[in-house]
Amino acid sequence: MNAAINISDLHKSYGRRKVVDGLSLTVPTGEICGFLGANGSGKTTTIRMLCGLVKPDSGGGTCLGLDIMRDAAQIRRQVGYMTQRFSFYEDLTVAENLDFVAAVFERDDRAEAVRDTMDRMGLAERAHQLAGQLSGGWKQRLALAACILHRPKLLLLDEPTAGVDAKARREFWDLLHDLAAEGLTVLVSTHYMDEAARCGRIVYLSDGRIVVQGTPDAVTGGSGLVLFEATGTGLDLAARALRAAAGVESAAVFGTALRIAGIDRAALHAATDATPDLIWQEVPPTLEDVFIHLLGRPA
Image (cartoon, rainbow, N blue to C red; front, side, top):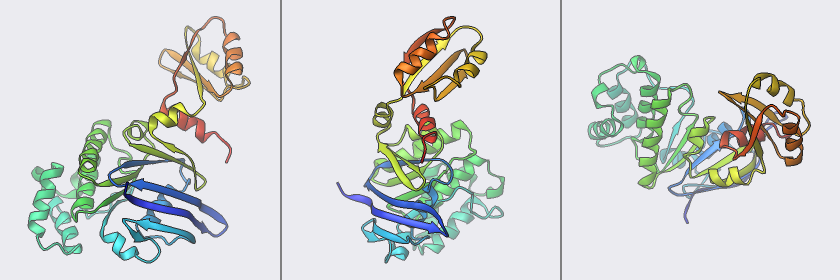
């Protein structure tokens, strides 16, 4: 399968701090690949290296078949890059912002491109509304429209739905899947586990290195994480006590249930035996459980 991204042994440091440390990654064309990791894990720096905004210290590879070290300018013309912060002119209308983007990319059919993109993104009725008056969800939709207006082959999205409500986030992801169905490749960083679950593959970074990658089901199933869930009374007090128990990585109350997690099944059984007033059962881990587990692992 053709690879939209194929990088090997990338390194990037700022002073003595290693931000990306020997990262290798291949993303097939047409895949939605999710980037996960704590703040400072190297996600944003990797994305910026891929689109030519930051030069790696060493390593290399290709993005859309172009060398990331030599062909940065050509790569940027074929990539749509969406930052965490809304970066368009708030005193211009939706249509004016998109027209400006079309001019930057020297589209000969500017008016048609703007009109078609607004129609596709559901922005036509807001064409004359100032960008600064849009809600967070509509701002993100405008930003995505600007990213695809020049018909890129790859989208690099850095926490694109941060601070956006659940309905707007779901609609945004529906748009991403529509684009991927047409062959567009998407690399997206996110802290939302419901979004990560919608990716074809997820890549978890820690201290600039890939810790685990695979489909959401494969990552969850291969985590080795064991969870037990309890119902009963006094769950908050039980959770506080269980957090200090050997082998218990986490103990948290969710509504009317208490969940404990760890990788030592025998230790977890011993912890549950110490709370005979609660009714316990083993449950499968979720992607969020695995994410919290990985966050707690030593570097």
